[in-house]
Image (cartoon, rainbow, N blue to C red):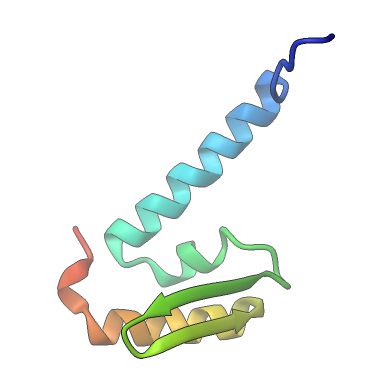
Length: 78
């Protein structure tokens, strides 16, 4: 049986870069940077105290991200 090797180094590097950009955008409150880490037709599902929120596509994801930031402005770490 073959041993799984994982993604090639260039793919691993691209995945790590995407993850770092995503976290940096969250930490700095960079809504555009956050949205840019998603595919244009991605769906984001978030469970909140108010219920489950869905955002499909960049505009809906941006709207939800802006709404979250306006509700919790102190969550961003600069």
